Image 1 (cartoon, one colour):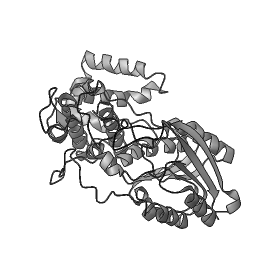
Image 2 (cartoon, one colour):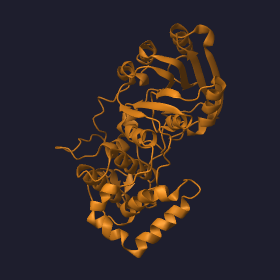
Image 3 (cartoon, one colour):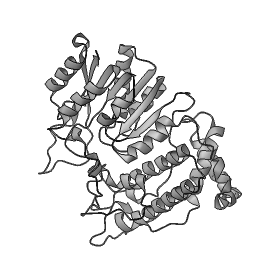
Length: 387
């Protein structure tokens, strides 16, 4: 998924630094998990990983990519009559076989993957389009009219609605386990983002249809880390409030927001898909982009007055041996404050900093409202051993 601060392109840099520190295994906390790129790396290195983020969509990813440790079997879906009927058709078998062949290089053990691919084929191919919350509020026709929010084409929005309703029905009926539900919901979130008519964030939609938005939505199996036997956990909320309850950690990994943009306003549409709209009242939307109530998701880390006190509170409250902070040179926490906090709460002689330049993530072009200082920024890793 396109996500500000995603560390996928920097994983080799982070892994090399962990190698230098000789950090393998133990218990780690990824305090700002996002799309879980670093949490997955830590799990693959043998860490039992705890994850946290204030966003519900991140919690979905945490459950699928970090907590889940085996491919889903979907035994409960034997009670879904429509799925049973679809599986009897020759077309269904051909579609599943084609998907498994296509995944051969990415996944080991195609038999383990088959129940997941079968379920994705059913959701992709056999559900009738449904006009529900996403279609009514975030979709536009091919020739949009005034007032329509152009986040998705109507065909894709109706498929998102149909799949999200089906997942809710399966979950409510107890036909899928928690991890099965979150793996399927992760596939939907990633598929929806791939056809979203945005420049990467949902603070605005593009006023003309992009080529990706005209492609049909297609679910893909999430590449989860399986077979580790590690006990991992996921959390949704404020990390400062959580950390004191987690107990002893070997590694605290921090990747807080770098600027004053609140993620809750930049990703409100996938947040809605993650949370659903199945309560007693439908979510209330406001403004041209359909923002939702995010009063409980404002992060102090995205405020100039709150970011340094939040860092101090976290370091003061955590029980960890090693701390590793990923932050770039344009972040709102001044480097002198990072060094001061790390030396104050850690062993001063162990404080280190290293950096690597990389191409910046750009969700839009230069404009009168925003001028980028360059196409590249420097990512720094700050390390200290706590007292």
